[in-house]
Length: 271
Image (cartoon, rainbow, N blue to C red; front, side, top):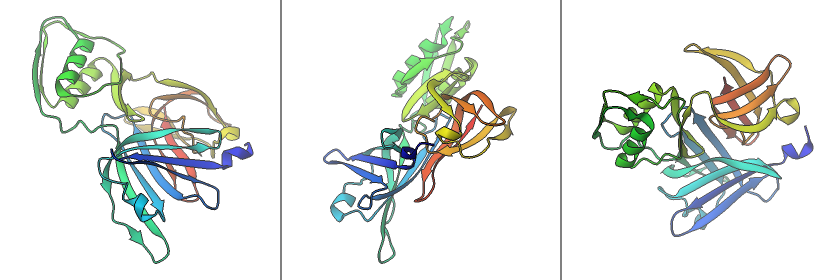
């Protein structure tokens, strides 16, 4: 492991519409102490990230407001990347023990579309799934960053979309052997076995902490992996793993990036 990998860096940028600021945490004596826990998964529901910043000035604290846009970047000096971005959904009460003041808030990765109004749309005979997805998303006000279906299913008898738009979109995706999920704040529809090739090899020299552990969940088999925090690992990342017992190319399905003041790690499941 090269020494620079231990020199971590965290950047939290907040824009509340009238003011913006970037808060930085690293190993230097005078930097801010920033902790976080950021989940990611292969689901169409936004994951939650919690961030805690210690001993902020009162002026800076007031910039942290519900609804503000926030992005979290983390990594190491010379190698930092986006972990997640979204909008603050809750600012938690300030914790103060007499010497340390902790400011915490949570934000949702992307936009929560689960409470969108029900829709009722009809599609004619021989309609294509991709066209239906695009029209349903437009009607419901759902922004989809990418659509890459494994199978662009044709509906010979047509289709009636009646109900919650996210549920309907998910049903169509499953029929097309594809999945819908958030990746770094953007909603994506893609072949469930495809992803973003990070061209990254995870091994002991690049951060792998321990031997991957086998898991089986609902007939899905894979490996649970822990490494030093690696921003390249996100939902649908394609990575190579090289360890004593596990070697191969895998797709990331879920995980957590976190820093608690001592452990700067990424835990994930790959299949």
